[in-house]
Length: 177
Length: 110
Image (cartoon, rainbow over all chains, first blue to last red; front, side, top):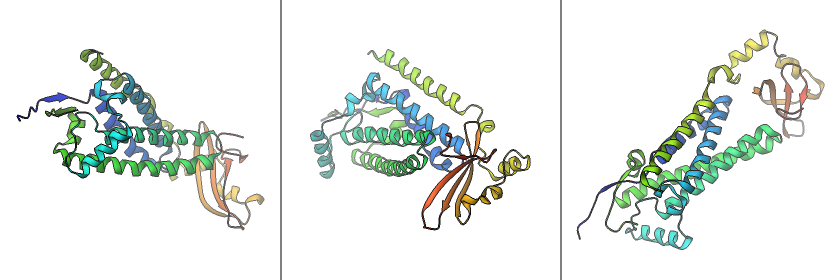
C-alpha cells in the first residue's frame, strides 16, 4: 500500500492564534495571581473573550475547528482509548476523539474559573475567591493532562502535534478520518 | 462554507481577538493596582489613605491577629483587605475604605 502523505491545512489561523494566545494569557494569569491584580484581571477577561470567540468558531468555523468535526460519541471515544492501548490507534486529521473531549473540558474549566473570578468583585468575596482558586487548580491539572495527551499522541502517531498547531499543517495519511 | 470564505472569516476572528487584547491591556501601567509596597507608602505619606496601624487600633480589631493585610484598588476606590484570626481560631476577612476608614461589607459594596 502506498502511503499518500500530502500536506494539508488542518488548523486555520484563528484556531492557532487562539491556542497560543491562550497559552500566553494562561501563563500571565498564573504568574500575576495575587501579585499584580490589574494584569491578572485583564488577562482573565482576555481568556474569556478568547473562549467566547472559540465557541462561536466551533459552530461556524472551518472544517476541523467545528465541534461537529471532533466531538465523537462516548462509545467511539472509548474505542479510540482502547486502540491507544493496543498501540495501533486510528489516525485523525483533526482532533482525535480523546483530544476533542479534552478541548471541550478545558474550555468549560477555563470558563468556570474565569466566571468565578469575575464574581469575586460582585459580593460574597470569600466564597467566589475559594471557588476561583479551586477551579484554577483543577484547570492546571487538566492542562497537564492535555500536554501529556499531546505528547503521547505525537509519539503514537509519529507526528509532531505541537508543530502542527503552530504551522497549521499535517500530513494526510491513507486511512485518515 | 467555501474554503476562501472560511479563511477570511478566520482572519476576522484573529482581528477580533487582537482588538480585544488592545482594549483590555491599553493604558496598563497607569491603571495598575497599588500592588507594590512603594506606592502604598507614597499614598500613605501623601495623606490619601489612613495608616494601617490606625485601623488596627480600632476596638473591633483589638486582640485579633492579622494574617494578611492588602491594599487593593476596586474600581476607583482604595480598600484595605484584612485577613484576621480571632480568639476562637476562626479566620475571617474585613474590608475598609482606605481613604475614609469606613468598614465595608465586601469589596465594592457598602
